[in-house]
Length: 430
Image (cartoon, rainbow, N blue to C red; front, side, top):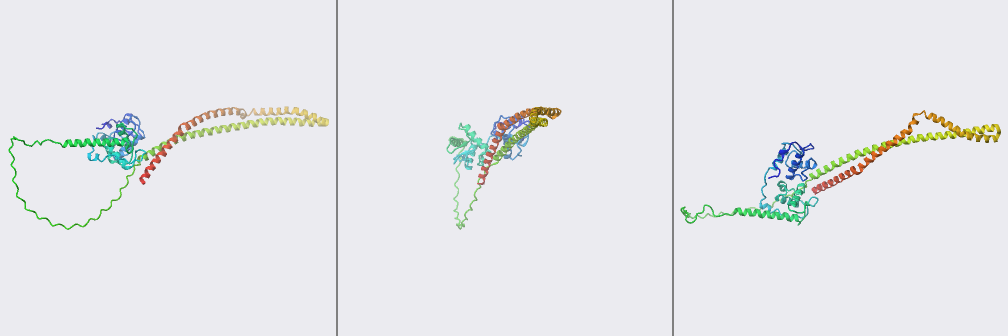
């Protein structure tokens, strides 16, 4: 009898289909589907995931149910699982079939191996006879390596203390062990059949001294008159040769699981890329803000530099003005010698005049709000740039150490799934 009977009766709510579910219901669902050969993951996980949803859909698809990946209390999927778990023991394989189940591989069989259809069918039927595959899976024998066939190979290897690698080689230990187990099962069934046919004396035989009267011998019947031989019939015309049968179509590989794996990988890639894009947008915004603040600081520096140049220019103008005036007055009073003396005096008085002009400019600037706030604004901008640079460094670290590796890993999964699907479809076209 199945190991998990009345499993569905313990469901208290929906399981799968993206709906929240109780942990006990989820674990019971995993155990039941694993017992039926539709799930090969861990059974103690308390939450739903893509692997469990895929297993539910596979069960629904093969049982002709609505394929929505969802179990509802007392729903059709729940009832079918319960019926399958309590269906009872399968009938043994007849000896005439066991005799034809010897595995004789022409190449490796297993995930990622050559796995020719004829070899895969031999392995599936043999594993079904030995109880390592569900009977429905074994006798349908599609000739393709799927998840349940690989799990059946691993189960047989595990149960027989072999190396659990999930594939068979021609003449390898797994193939030899399968053939030995088939032969032992055949001998056991033939022996039981022979024992059932042996019998003793019939209970109705009478021996010497029996109280029953002897049965009289029947009287001989009169001879039957000879029957005349029939006339030979004319020979029948020769039959036309049978028409050649059309070549059987090569069984196609089931690529649906590879398509599902590709869709899952693409979904993972899209989510990882979206997370990366969000952080990259944030980094771009921070960089733009820093650039704007740096430009504003450059404008402040330009303004301050211009004011400094204007002050120096005022000093130069004062010096030249003083020297010119002194030279003019000296020349007017004392000729050329007076001009030299007056120019020298003017050169000495000129800077004082420039300082006086600068003091006038400072007095005018001190009344301007812009002049008094530029330095404070520059310091505030420098502080903000420092804070933004720290945030930008954190975002960049997240992008480089977490998000970008996830995107690269997801892209690798998509490439592998795409290559496997294209290979499967190409084999079907051949």
